[in-house]
Image 1: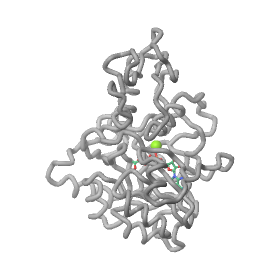
Image 2: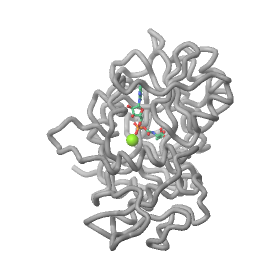
Image 3: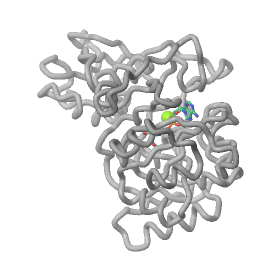
Length: 326
Ligand code: TXA
Ligand code: MG
């Protein structure tokens, strides 16, 4: 039976209390973060976390990020090395997820980390969501609030479009500022490994802690989300196009193409990341065929944009193959 899905503004009186109430009842709800909207549940409840996987159609072996109110809350559940603590102090609250060893007696549901002995922790910058976590006084598990295999949502309307009838509540705090998912690093002792590029660049991390940031050894998959996968619009994606050649085109800087779909006419990569998923959605609504995309410089957050575009352009798996998306 479909359930009624309400969208409630983050600024409405009682919005935080309502979200907390739903989470304490073991419900799964849509919450804003600065990167993309999350599909949130009480991270200590195995049954609530199972509901996340079911609602998204996500394979149970692909672990979730545990959202915390700060380093102190993280330290209740994971081993925080000196390097991990430095990263938390410098980049939190903000779009950096840190994968640490789980504490043996951690109360986080095993479904959150898909039975791995590590746990990904992140302190989101969105003040409403942080207030909800603080009021709960325990973390929330939240993947991006899209159906598995689809684009991450950057507005409450996008969450509603894909999940209405499946969740009771979406808290609306407008379009997310960053627009792409958080940077993920694994930290073991003082070794930092980049698992997913995001708006916090490897250079920034390296400069902040004066330690090298290693690339992931692509021959070893520690979590399925690391497999080359697609964040798929329905249309086919053609990368590095200088011209539309008759296709719907998402431009960047000076390239021609649909004028309202230029990720950043000024060539600003931060603005381009902010617009990326929304413009892919808009372009997808205009064609069943091909979306052409301008070249994006592969520096700073451009690396994360190109990572998402490469996944969107990757050959599509069919439903019977292993699902590699999150
Ligand atoms: O910005 C974000 O990170 C958003 C917002 C909602 O916080 N969340 C998000 O979650 O993008 P999700 O589930 O769509 O992507 C999380 C990624 C997945 O690729 C998963 O495999 C990886 O994090 N991950 C989670 N736990 C991990 C772990 N213990 N070790 C390695 N990778 C992990
Ligand atoms: Mg995702």
